[in-house]
Length: 187
Image 1 (cartoon, rainbow, N blue to C red):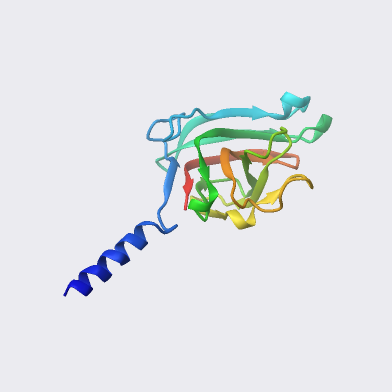
Image 2 (cartoon, rainbow, N blue to C red):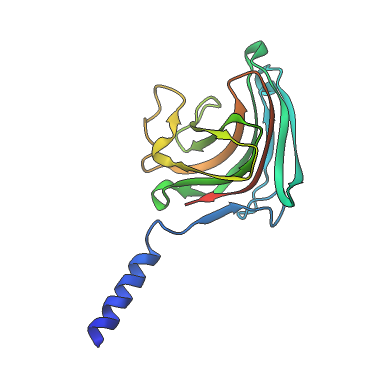
């Protein structure tokens, strides 16, 4: 009988230390702030002379609260992005999770998740994951192994890095942005 209890204890201990647990970064329980008490920021390419415009507001789509990012993304004047971004503090070590999940409602356009780490020091450095945003509530899973680097001098993969910020980004094309984010976290 002691062996059964020992095996059960070892199984439970191993299961609790696996990557199977989710960590919610934000689900709008405290709108405007993450579960780490960090504020979301809205940023456009205007910081570098671009002409994209937009806004983010708290909204409800099909009775689900969300951050709704709308705007006009244009590549004019070397621009091309709008984004909602939050610092991750304390930083999240990617080895503790398999990736990021988001619950979104979109406008049938392509969007991106941008991650910044301790080695992405310049504003143009990040790791990105692209996804299609259907016109219905959907959960997207973005495995860390599928994020791509933005510059040739960054490490190819996110191995052994800590995430210091995460952003939902409309970029790289001329289009009208309209995307809602109801939850974001790590899986």
